[in-house]
Amino acid sequence: MRQIDFMTNPRAFMAQFGAWLRAHPAEHNVILSMCQMAERMLARGERPDIRFVAQSEDGEPQVAAVQMPPHNLVLSRFAGEDLSALAARMAEATPSFPAIVGPSDVAAAFADHWARITGQKTVEYMDQIIYSLKTVHFPPDIAGSFRLAREDEAPLLASWMKAFAEDSLPKAEHLSAEEALRKTRDRIAQGSLAVWDVDGKAVSQAGVSGTDSVARVSLVYTPPEHRGKGYASAVVARLSQQLLEQGREMCCLYADARNPVSNSIYRKIGYEFVGRSSMYVLAPT
Image (spheres, rainbow, N blue to C red):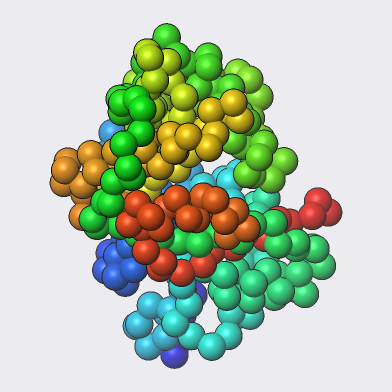
């Protein structure tokens, strides 16, 4: 019998769906990292605003949807045949989210059902390739060295973060200069932003998030004046190696499928194809 549950407690959700999600750690890394963040907030006595919808059949997980308002709805892989019931039940709850993200086949099917049920137009915005890595292949010698970002570099790296968002993300996720600076300073304080350094100056960056077991490399950005010199390859390779040495089981990343340069870089480093992820943006009603 099919069952659809709405939850707000990350511990209860992970007790039901955690093992199933962790069986595909790269594909589900965004959901798993959201759950880890929410569980840590609970442990600190905070009340995370996170919402789960879980569908199962005869007690076996089929699909999950997670959202931290006002951010995107993130879908898991789907082990069933029809997503219409999930979309219909969610539409009854009238959630608000700017986009639908998930494995490409699941996101496409859910977006179609959502548009039909709600009348809200959905448009594919992003097609990404999901990669994972357990062994790093270092690029040939590249001038410079790897290090973590410094606080005095925050204004420069914030401008890169803002440019990255404008190049890669829908308008709803673009950052003001103030937001970019705050996020950059938070990452520097957490030690989750690295750079490639040439003669004492940052020339490329990469960030890390994810879970305690699987790191997700992101925010890879090289400003135009420094491109074509291998700096992005170098910083991603060294950051990935550092994360593995620190005990992560693997690294993963999501790359724009329409950018052959970045995909070539990641494959040469040792990142291997896992699957595809898509984002469907919802048109304002």
